[in-house]
Image 1 (tube, rainbow, N blue to C red):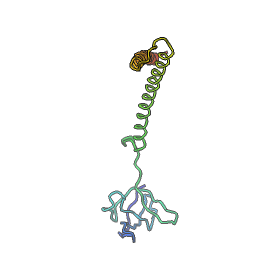
Image 2: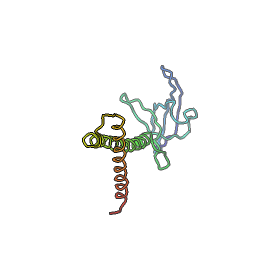
Image 3: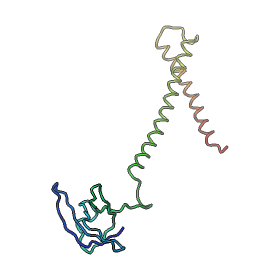
Image 4: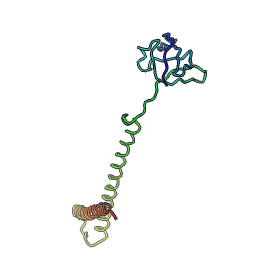
Length: 161
């Protein structure tokens, strides 16, 4: 809402804050007396009688009135902090889910390789080096099979039907 400043007096509060006490007249001619305009109001330094300002008058629980700036809305505004945080969080969640999926595939491949090597005739020697080599070979094979499956799954999701 637009107001014309009819009277204005600048003061400091006992705590040192800047405030201007004003009498404001709205567009319909309604007079609002004893309205505080605090130092963080836009262009506060240049406020003077006769000037027009935009804002909203709000009263606190004790009935003291103050003029607060109008909130601007429109399509030209950038995203708010909450929107930016949600975008960052969303990207982080996607990365975490991808990493989780790959971690599960990796450890499933390792466990399957261990299970296969230790329960079959593939390993009968007590040499730990041979055991690690056999497990690594089978782990890599299981991972390559998973990668083929994952690539096919992605292609299947792109199909329109």
